[in-house]
Amino acid sequence: MPIQTTNPATNKVIKRFDYMTESEVDHSIAKAAETFAIWKKTEYSLRAELLHKIAGLLREKRRNYPN
Image (cartoon, rainbow, N blue to C red):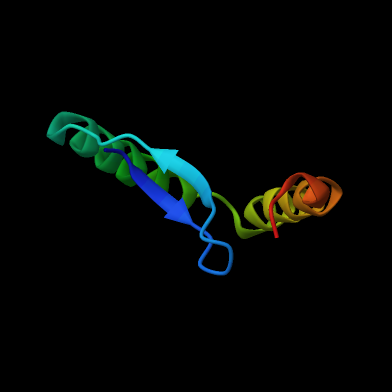
């Protein structure tokens, strides 16, 4: 049975997630560490610009997300 996210107010399943193998978990952790190593060396102004763009996209598409 996959892991699932449930809305506690309605008891409706929002999303199901498949289990990951140990090697998939290890790969995901390694990729996250590699990405963070690059991100922390990125200039603050570029990081801020990117995050502002992401925030704008999230606001534009907010109707697509469940409440």
